[in-house]
Structures are given as C-alpha cells and as structure tokens.
Length: 184
Ligand code: HEC
Image 1 (cartoon, rainbow, N blue to C red):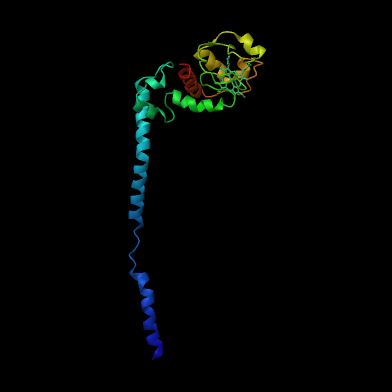
Image 2: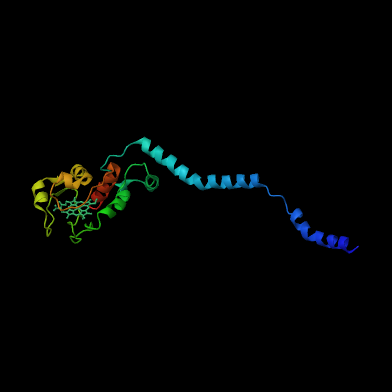
C-alpha cells in the first residue's frame, strides 16, 4: 500500500504550522498602547506644567528670559505659553537675511540692530536710510517696534524694508524680548 505510507511521511511537514503558539493580538495591542502612553507622558506633563505656569502670573513684557529659572524656561518652550527671548531668537531668523544683531555687526540690506530697543529711529551710523524712515522720528521702544513690525510698509509708507511683517502678536513679543536682550 504505497499511497498510504507516502501520506504518513508527508504529515510531519504540515505539523509545525499547527504547533505554533496561537497569536494573542489583544495582549500585544494592549502592550503597544501602554507604550504609547508612556511615550506621550512627558509631553502631557510638560503641557500641564506650562498651563500651570501660565495661570500663575502673566509675566510683564519687560521681563527678560534670562531672569527666569531654568525649569520655567523649559516649560515655556512649548507652544501656547508666554513668549521668551529664546523664542524670539527663532523669529529673528526672518530678519537675519537683512540685519545683523551682534555688537558692532555690519550693516546689511538693513542696519545693524544691536541695541535697537531705545535707539532713536534712523540713527545707526553708516546706514543710508530712506527718506520715509528718516522722517518718522521718535525712538524704537517696545511699543513702537510692536506697531512697526506688525506691518512695516504700512506703518512707514515708503520704507525700504521690504518685509511683510510679523503677523502673530506673541511672535512679535518674543522677537522684541530678544531684541531687548541683544541691547544689553
Ligand atoms: C528684506 C530685508 C529686510 C528684512 C527681512 C527685515 N528688514 Fe528691517 N530693515 C530693512 C531695511 C532696508 C531697513 C531700512 C529701512 C528704511 O530706511 O526705510 C530696515 C529697518 C529696520 C528697522 C529700523 C532701524 C533703525 O535704525 O531705525 C528695524 C527696527 C527693523 N528693520 C527691524 C527688523 C526686524 C525685527 C526684522 C525681522 C522681523 C526685519 N527688520 C526684517 C530690511 C529688512
């Protein structure tokens, strides 16, 4: 009876499939989910800390970030938190194509902005300002910068600063904190 014997010999090949341990998808899913929660936990915690810090007191605009304790600064690095000079440094990248900020830095397409907060308008030596900027007058205090940087070409019609503006008020606040920091 050769056919029977052949079948018997083939059977062991199929057996391994059946002996494999049955998969336990639910357990694996649960494990993955708890891993995910662990991964997000620090973010959630940071968010909670940030909110707590926010509710405590709205810091006045003239508070330099360097005065803030390190832990608070870290919490503020998450969005929807009080602006800081560190955040402003990132915003300044939009200006850096035309402006330097370091002390005695060269004028570029725009004038060097070191010490701009508190500096009389159109007063940086060696820069050829437009007639419009020269005619503006006044001093670049935080309020004047906030108004100007929101929409430069509207606030100083005829300015040669071809820049659309920093639309977000919190971004402007952070930027001005950074400019103040760089004025020390
Ligand atoms: C495309 C180049 C360009 C960019 C980008 C730019 N600026 Fe300017 N900026 C200028 C020029 C040019 C002037 C001089 C304007 C004039 O004389 O009318 C100027 C002038 C200024 C002034 C007045 C300076 C003074 O001495 O009175 C301030 C303040 C200023 N820019 C801030 C900024 C900030 C902050 C940013 C980024 C958010 C920025 N600018 C982005 C070109 C630029």
